[in-house]
Image (cartoon, rainbow, N blue to C red; front, side, top):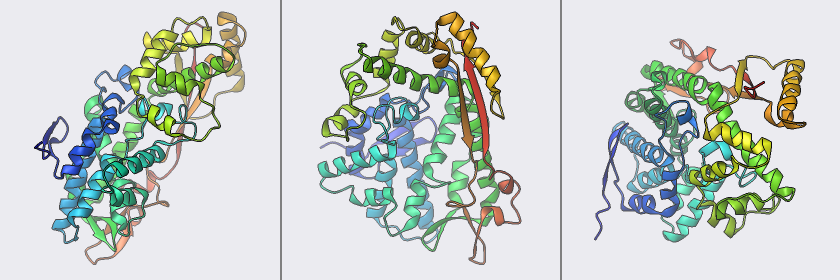
Length: 403
């Protein structure tokens, strides 16, 4: 008999327990093991060398924080059955199982309008059949259909265990200290009121620190101008590859990537699509980029060499859109250097948007000593909440350094 009650040593949270046998079986499943080969932060390691962690790490960490949160709620009087505990742990463990290569960067490029959450749900349903319905309650919680709302809020909300783990984990691996949130303090302040997740009022500053840490991580790490361009380059590469294939060119690629590059964009997802998608990982993309970096197409080879040789385009960041005349000048110079039409492909203006805290959709509630609930931004003790509910936008212009 296999011992399924394992202990995993995690560099961020320490020892992680697997308290239910089904969790071990799910972790061992090929769909979940694929996450070892899916980067948590795309190409961030080209900017922050330590950021080499993967979705497998993150999923285990989120499961650990979920277990800690449920234990905290139990201590505060919330009745949670063993079946509910198991379901919540399964739901958070599998919340990212549908991620494609390089996580968010190539979402929609391989499976068109298939968001990773849609694919995660589809794979959870397939696994549920294999495990004779043991994931049914977990799927309900994941979809937000379970009658106790706080379970879904722990999985997906403005203060969920998913965010708590990725902020702490990404901060650890990138070395950006501003994102290092105190997960234990935040979880210790969690409570349930009217079947909704709330925070004890005295934890307000820990929550504000969490929201500002997330904001700093986005602008310093995820939306760092070079990181943003690196991610965009991946999209451009696949887009260019699809364009060339549609015009009769053949490009070398692994069998599964070749399949998606040639796949009809308008067809509905088939069983073969799902089977092949669950065999795709970062290695397929990197292998293709290496091969295409020597392609005779100037645009494709240039984009691929940017990644392989880490020779990124020149980037400029601004709080407002760039002047059209300035962009056209860069396009003209690129055409002169690389050939007619290359400017439109190699000069790009992209934007990144961030709303640090949405006070309108799923606001964070504070539980007063009187038992009343108020939103975070309504508290007279709040310091920053009323200032971080504004949408911020940054614009990034990229163009070849040679011009």
